[in-house]
Structures are given as C-alpha cells and as structure tokens.
Length: 214
Image (cartoon, rainbow, N blue to C red; front, top):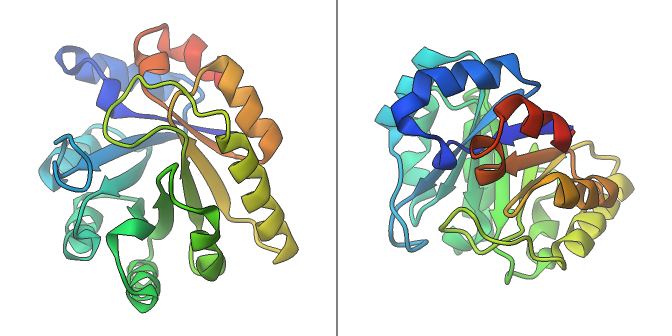
C-alpha cells in the first residue's frame, strides 16, 4: 500500500520538520491538492508552492488538480516538479480532450491520473481504463479536508478494480477522503493500493499514523 499524505493538512509553521517526519515514515508519496475556488469552493496552492516542495524533498509529488482548466495548468505543474498529475473527468466535456491531455502528460515522461467526484457515475471512467496510470476515487466531496468517508465508496473501488483486472491492467486505484486506520482497511480490501490521508496523518504522530494505514 502506498501512503500519500495530503499537505492540505500540514502545519506550515513546521513545514520542514514535518517533511522530515514524512521522509522518516513509510510514506512514499506526498499528495498536493490544487483548488481554484471555482471547480470546488476552496482555494489552495499553485505551481510556485509545488516548486518549494520539490526543493525540500525527493518524495514522489502526487498532484491532484480540482480546477476548471486542467489543460492550461498541466505543463506548469509538471515543470514545477509534479511526478503525477491527476485531473477530473468532470472538468473536460469532450472525451477526446481527456485522452489528449493524458497522452500529453505521458509524452512528458510523467504519470497521469483521472478522478471523479462521489456523485459522478463510476461508468464515466470506463472509456479511459487504458489511458491512465491511476484512478482517484473521491470518498468525500472535494473541496475541504476533515470530512467523513462515504461508505458507498468501497463498492466503487471494488467495481473499478474488477474492470481493471478484466482488462489485465495494473493501474493504481487511489482513494482520498476520510481515510484513517479503519477506512484504510475497507479501501485496501476493496482493491485500492494508494491512500491519501491529511488530517489523520498531520494531527497525530506522523510515523505512527502512516504505519497504521499500510
């Protein structure tokens, strides 16, 4: 299981200290939530902040953009140091644009992910199973940290893993929202292999919290 702590919940007055704690833990990735105040009702980070994280750590930078124009910002985040760029299916109307952006990101030698909100039918991911390295299932409504895990997410994870297995694909299934030791077990058993956790990691002992999610 890959653990990707979300820096949305980081204590920025202790940023360097907490990055060192992450590096000393079993966390392999850092999750970077980008919100534009339009696609979701919150405003967070831009590419320049990501550059700071890239200078501060060699951990894998897992960027999730909840923005209206993922095409415009893709190259900016890749240039800033993103290792993976995940955008939302709902943000682009035309299927060909979704596939085109995935292909462009792969041409830059980077990983690409596709995400959907809890209310979006899972079937909307089916046309793209062969185009992405990672599929992000939101287990809360995107926009704010600290929400409770939506139990129906487990069925979506299991169904998606079944589809991927049927196609012989090893793509990651990442889950974000309300992850703690209890919900991590639910996600793992359903077929997820990447877990995003913010509040649970940064509001507890970082190393112990990460360990409990594996």
